[in-house]
Image 1 (cartoon, rainbow, N blue to C red):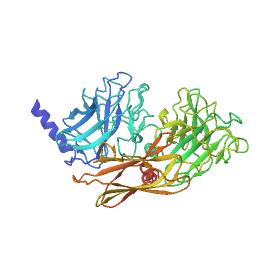
Image 2: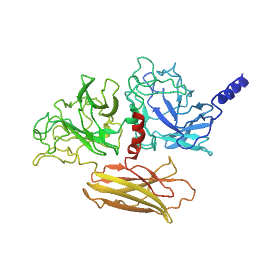
Image 3: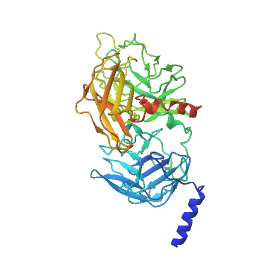
Image 4: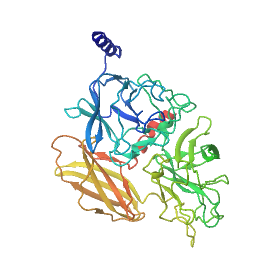
Length: 505
């Protein structure tokens, strides 16, 4: 019996072109986690891996770890298995027959256990505590998981292109359902090595790649003190290219059903710029700026609020670009009585999360003498506009340089460093680095990290701005190289625009 199993295993290795190989960091990524189980059982948890290379990879002897009481522990060892080129490998606590999955997992192991708090999963090529190579990391092991919905059983999905998996902005909550039994209500896209999960019906494959190129950045769902119908919302272009919004559509919930609210007849949103869509003109409301589009169909409910933005018709192969709020209960933020808008944390890609929003604390773009709070003025962006951040290896350590184009109510900066890709980050500056700039005044900063990289591993850095009210915004991550490396603070979106556009064309 065992000799036959061994023979079949060897034969399987031969049948995948004989080219199965070891892996480097991020050759395989943890691409999706169903940490909350499904409606048929809370223990019906699963992990999906994605091969980012053009070669099959042998997963035999690989290990997955998890946090237990704050310490990294082995969760399971993959005894055998091949993940195909650009394919997936599904590891589940239960089989398809014992859960709501419609696809059979590549590996069923009852050791699969994903925490609902302090979640962090790591993937190693080899023993994690004995020379294994770290391949991928999911979540940071603090607080609640970075994404996913326990109550509605929606999985936690990694965005494209994959970056630092410990960063919450790398993850979104699933809003489509593929690979589940007929009638199942879970959301997620479980995919095995056989590729059994089909693409979402009536949606092109590039929809995930386009998510987040334009975001809902602010909603004035309560109107202003002149009229409660003077509602507006603002879009933000997260790329370094102008975006043609012609024939894009915006939907809202009506009686629990998604319905068309408006179609943008024409308009271009500039790179890293804004586009204001309002129910009323500046003359008819208290705003001091003229909207880019005035449309009487703008109607934002005071309860069960959810807007969706599509490139094209929402009900005919339009591509979902962004979502604002979850459509449950009161809006995620904003103040009806005080007329304070609902503002987006622009580093949070999943706008359906209530944590993606806060109530406005600034006012810009209103008529003199008015009392509303919000920033309909399209020139106002984040409290700090970080234009560049670079790290250069020097003789006595590493030199960090960053430049801001504008700073509003910023106290200063903290710097964080990690040894090696996927490692834990620690703050390295003793005292806060005081901000020196102001609105519209470019400022430059330098910090020398006097550390010698004696073990040859990459050192990675990011910086955080700290506002007067304690809010923090994190930059992109930069690794030390022989020459200076410079990125945009929105690099994960901006740098991918060329690939997105080529795929879309």
